[in-house]
Length: 178
Picture 1 (tube, rainbow, N blue to C red):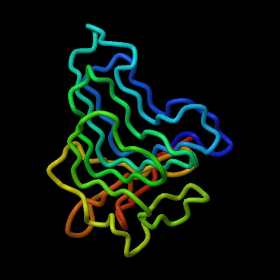
Picture 2: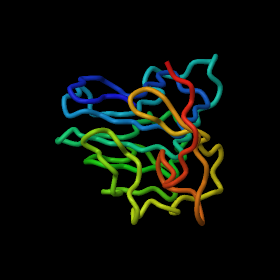
Picture 3: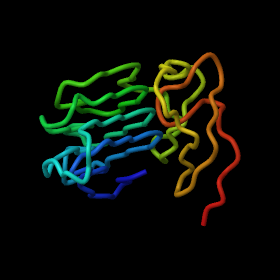
């Protein structure tokens, strides 16, 4: 989780030299006070030979943009392969991706969070994100975020994987956190 109010972070995730990159099962939140309208930046500082590959995979994340003016959820440069963006929730104003991308089973809008004001982005019963994901994408998340700084096991419940970082009714035992 990143960017909670009154945060003024820049990029929430910055992968400046690319490489084969996977962003899986995260809550990525941008506060209304951010100084940068981009949430994930990829290959901003050019290709680095130590990071082979130019592929970005964004799978089963929950993006929340509280910036009233909107922005960009994912900004790869034109040197990147088209990113694969699947099973994500995009809540709040903004453009999903600034470059051509493979978009599969994402949800844009209000997915019916339990309590977004207090950073609980679990899904309520009746959410359109429940069982809406595409199971062909791996890896699927093994853990879910547990606010304020921990995690718990995640397992698929129902007819299919849920879109976003949380599985409705799929939370398991909390991890040992400090």
